[in-house]
Image 1 (tube, rainbow over the protein chains, first blue to last red):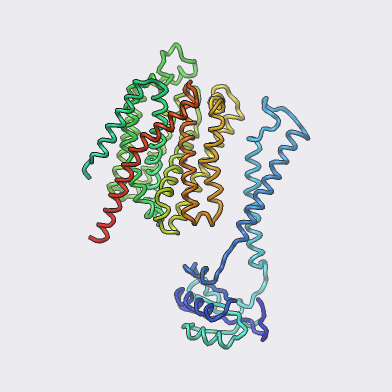
Image 2: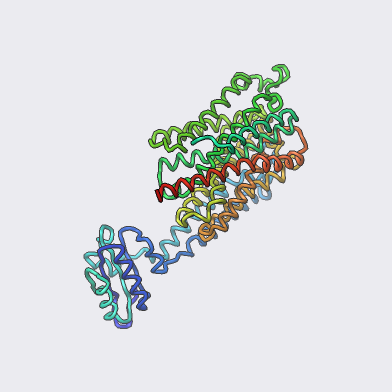
Length: 176
Length: 349
């Protein structure tokens, strides 16, 4: 977590419903607070759009990993069957590409999945052993019925006041 | 619902046309078979989609339902165009020759491939499909049991239908996975049809769901088609590989590549992109490509079995597909309008 100029680690506000969380997120963004993070027990419709969360990296990296490794897998089979150890099987041509496809496909899929999982971990900055949010006692309820909004702001006072006005049940400062 | 003039007229016209192609000869009759199966694949593909939705529910089915039911309403036309061909089995099926002229392999299959049993089976498939279509469109199918049972029966019927009307044209050939491949082909074509005609009206989220399911069906088609090919190609047995050799000779070679590209590859590449999947324009392009590929695909499966000039067969296929398609499309449009009217009446009383 980034530390603000004032040595401030962010505010965490709890809301009672997804709608309130969504409305608060909208108002904070409108007021110019852009470093927001929301935590909810289920996907709140519209929240990702309000946070302008877009994920472009993973699909592209997965596609790239799949095509490159599938290409390598195909070339390796072609090289070993045609150049390195040419042997005629069942009267078929040396470059019997239909037989290369299952391995090509599987290598491509495997690497797409691995690239997806690894990119996801890296982008989430995992593995990570501690996070200031874990000190917040109530935060575990974000997996049952708590809706949380974390705000990093250069003007924590204004942000706290705005969060209160949006109907936050509680607003606390995160400890390092 | 009282039968209307369009439906009855369509049935009469298609039945007459089917009988007429039998009188003209094998070229006309075989191409007619391919043309009506191009169109008939759509209601046959709509059946399992509706039944799967009956089991799972979900907004994608609510959005697709009026279109699918309108497609399903064209099923009687397929039956009408197909059944007269039963009068001329010798024009189409080599196994109707006297037994002594058949190869040993085919002679062993005559317990299954004989005209009486064949006609009874075809009547049974048609009766089953019409019955399922009736239950689904009359909204009598409430129970999950009917949907689950209907799916099993549909797959069995499509499998044996593909053995009878597709595979037995070359009676030496046999492939287990043929029915699954054809079933996936039909469902993919039905999805393409509802996306082509309905993508603009659907809710964005439901449209994306439909596109995702369609992608899944296309992938299963390519799995089935490829697994049949790799098994036959690796074994390289004369009875089986001849089927592919007939289909890679002359004009059928480019047809096989183009139909694969149009039916699977182009839609697949479009559907890979999450951005394109959200745009009706892209989806309609993918759907149109898939349906064009579907015409070639059905032609490629059926027509190389007959010893005619492939180019003429293709041209005639396009002509007959367009002619018979006019009736299918007219009935589809009428039913779709009826669906819309019924929905409005429900909404506004």
